[in-house]
Image 1 (cartoon, rainbow, N blue to C red):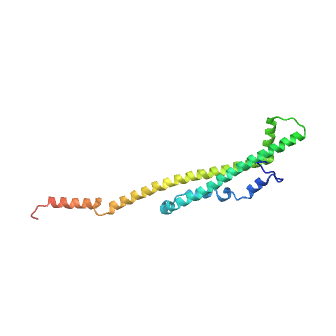
Image 2 (cartoon, rainbow, N blue to C red):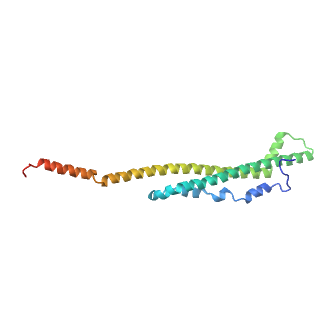
Image 3 (cartoon, rainbow, N blue to C red):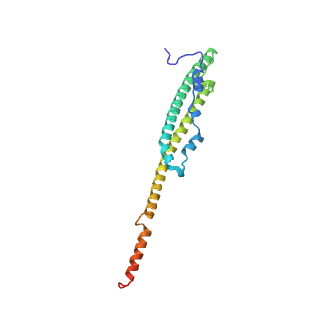
Length: 186
């Protein structure tokens, strides 16, 4: 019993891969760039959206990683089929061949090349999404920092506007000084 199903249509796994809606179709660098932008005028919305964006891009990354793993498996299957095909072709011709020649022929096999190219594209997509998740972590850190800065600014404004502020203390000191310099009889 063979571990690899032998099908007449050897490109079926590749066709299935092309038919699936890939992460590439759901993700673009431009969309990520827009999602990473922080609107300083509306920090609350940016903070509120952060968790949802991270969850969304985490799901996209998981799907892209799965697709990359499946594409790698399809490339390995295509390589095994190419070995079988090339070896049987060379044997049927009665040609003598070395493992190096066999390896070179397999690498040049169109099905293996297509599957390898597809696997590389899926790996690239998964890596882009992984980097996008890193950027979202940095965005989170920036939002925290901007939130702290905004809070400090608000505290400063409240200190200056609150009763007992610096201006009130200066006025109180002036009035005390004014009374102290005036004689008691006046």
